[in-house]
Image 1 (tube, rainbow, N blue to C red):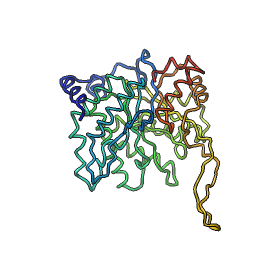
Image 2: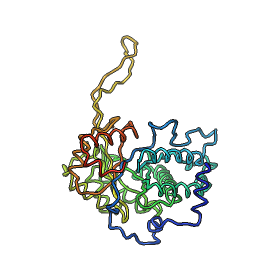
Image 3: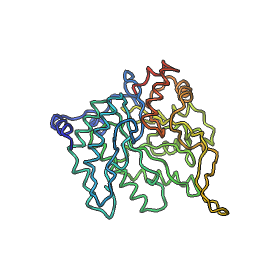
Image 4: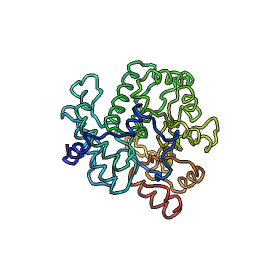
Length: 360
């Protein structure tokens, strides 16, 4: 582990994080529900891969035969923190593969990684708090809590437990969340909602206090996840592009966002997801059966796809429609940090009043 992390751990060994104590149920947070201090600027973040830094890896991606480990992933994450601090970026989504093979049922040699890295996780969490860095996870589409397959549900719960434990061992407050979707509809979306709610109620408190639910772009709309929230109390994350692509109930934007923001845990500033749809041709390689030659088939874009960068005028319009509301923004653009840095420049040029609201 890097010497800096070890030094940070040594300096922090006797200190506790009051925000984490509040989140763990040991102390009641004084913040109002769903709102953080209004003196803090709003944050903009990006997900996982860093494109603007030199050789910044997001996790130890070696195959199991090479004995990958969370400890190396944390060294990579520490270097990413350097980059985030230099660029004044205050929000980041951690790779869901941070602890490789940690829940693999046939590889018990990887199961104790999180425990083995307790000191490093505590130290890195302290550094994240010192940088006022908001961290989160967003597991893959293979995490399905409403699956009819009990084995898949058990595996999904194990993965969520591991990610929640990482955030807990970093002693991060309630803003550090694990974002999931409802899952499949299996021909009956009402049953899918009910099954998700039933699984959620069976989760341990260590998972529930980290878990938040997002509307998707195909199956479960904003109205669907609001209904699940009413049944379970699970906090919600609003995804703007998903809302535009899948809103069969024709809900209005601002009232819907207000309802989402109001679901946040006490002491946690809400967040939303923003991305722009791709507009380019999709070029799909295929083999011509008649000629035997490889060809490129051009198709119109699918509006659920994410663009490389964020269209600044869409972002500005959204922020104006949501004026007066308080939330952080996670950008889900293919260009990652480069998209964030470009949006920052665009706001300075086209909407300097909005640029002042965001720290990064």
